[in-house]
Length: 265
Image (tube, one colour):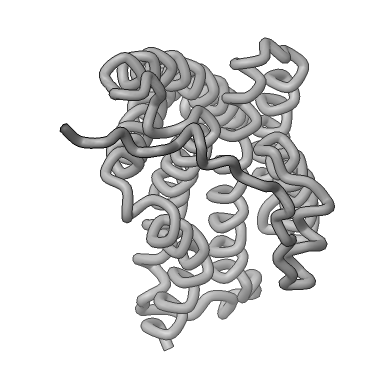
């Protein structure tokens, strides 16, 4: 039973992310590098947030349970703010790298667009965040023990898996929206990304009341997904064309006179 729960929750949590990695990232070495570098930036933000929380706990009264709970909420908020700060730092780094790649290329254009970098960096933040949030839970799911035997919710593992999947998607969507907002200087979009991240993190404190946390988080995920879709250049017409499986005919006429190959001497 433990192995079934472990593999089932693992596939729920990371199945979509693994599919996105294989289909959109693994085949391009440059995207793989951006993915790994993005994970490193997220790890640094987690390290700093952990240090701040650890120091605050050491300097406080450990016997005060309410104070410790408040410090936990404080640590989560600091972690969110640091993650978004490092997302901005990663945007600036990729922006500089994009300019350098454009300079080195023969046609003067970067081999990867800013929107593609935003997607890959968001996916990297999501994957590494999901790994660190659920890895201990997955380890406990192998056993021994049975969840809910003492009256607790038996849906702890599956709920954690679905929550992790939502977090992976959210970071991917936030990355697309965040990079576009930085590029176009839309500060209200940046504020909404940070606010939605704070709200999502805060909703997890409602657990084990899973209905009150998981449902709003998935509403936020769907909303951010729609926003990221249109930000990346998607449209309702494209969705309808994809669902109908119809390919539009190209009625444009190309003139080849200007594309003639020069005659060799």
